[in-house]
Every structure is written in C-alpha cells, then in structure tokens.
Amino acid sequence: MKKSITLIGMAGAGKSTIGEMLAQAISYNFLDGDKIIEETINESIQSFIDQKGREEFTKIEESVLLSIQFNQTLLATGGSAVLCDAAMQFMKKESEVIFLDVSYENISQRITNLSERGLVRNPNQSLQEAYNERISLYKKYADYVVVNNGDIESCLKDLVTLTEEF
Image (cartoon, rainbow, N blue to C red):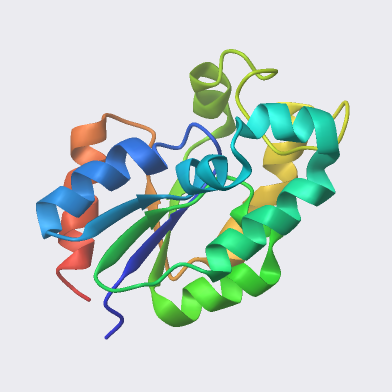
C-alpha cells in the first residue's frame, strides 16, 4: 500500500481546494505544488512563465516535484505536472495518483482570466488546446479517476470512499 496521494488534473479541477479538505478528512499532510513552486522561484507562476517561458517553468516544476518527501502526504499538483514524465513516474511510485476529471465546459467556466491563472501553455495556445493536449496524459498517469463536475462535497465524499480502499 502506498501511503500518499497525488491529485492531478487541469487548472480549475479543484485539486487544491478539495485536496486540502481531503487531507484534513484522512489526517494527511497537505502540500500544494504550485505554492511550493512559487516559494522556490520567489514570484507568481504566471510572472515566471511570462518572463522565461514554458520550458524553463517545466524544468523548475519537475525539480520541485522530484524533491517531494512523501509520508502520508496529499500533494495537489499544478495542472502541468503531467508534462514532466520523470516527476510523474516518481509520484506514481511514491503515491496513489488520482485524476480529478472535469469536463472542458466546466473548466472553461471556472477559469475566468487565462492571462493571470498561471496556466502553463505555449504562446497563443487556447485553453481548449491545452485541455486537449493534457487529457490523455492525465488518464495515462492516473491510478484512479474521480469525476468532479458537480459540487465539492460530493467529490470529496467520492474521494474519501476511494481512499478507504487503499
């Protein structure tokens, strides 16, 4: 049995919000990957991406994710974690990886300001194109898939039930 959990999914999927609630419900340590990255780079993710680009950000993200010490930990990754194969392999080895699957329609409603969200994407890549690029990667790396198109409470309940099986 793996002792930790990693949440993956698009920006706006609810990884941080639900992850923090789930960690509390199952008495795990909660880590927010994006917050750790921002502390490491000393600026917002969006500012870093605007200045240095997607490739440089992905290098930092992979380095941060590879440094996570998993011990009854719940890690909410950034939406772009799946672009870092080495980090994903590490997280799959150290934790149960759960994909919070949210429809594109719901993601597009949840992300209202793309230019400030810190969404890792190529220049001029639309939200739809980023979603299409990543959806197969989320499914590839996931040990489990939990749909989060409804309210937070029902998703949290599904996750708690799932974690009881670990």
